[in-house]
Image 1: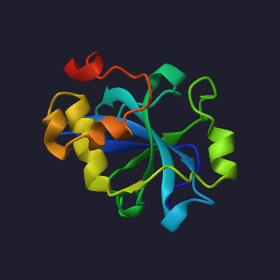
Image 2: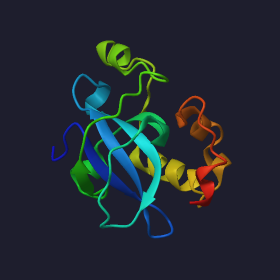
Image 3: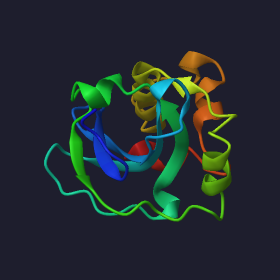
Length: 145
């Protein structure tokens, strides 16, 4: 394991840019998964990642750590984990070991982030992307990033 709680990571997009995620929890998760927040931010391969604010987060998800371990998703620094309690009860979910959060393959997360940014069909996986999307986040805004 080369990643840790609070690490940022870059997820490659089809246009050569990167979406940004952050590791929120590495312990007490099912199937050795990693609980992450995915942001609506897009960056290049070298720009410093600034701390997330709650409005940056478009999804909370469990991810199989393969792409973090093998650096397919390069680490991009670390910083504080945003306080998201207004729209997600992170502490309660952590205590319960995230019972209602399925573990997604990294390829699904890549497809989701590409679809969010208008680079892949949103309905390519049926309603799965809508299920990954955080409650109340409108996907029509950031798609033109």
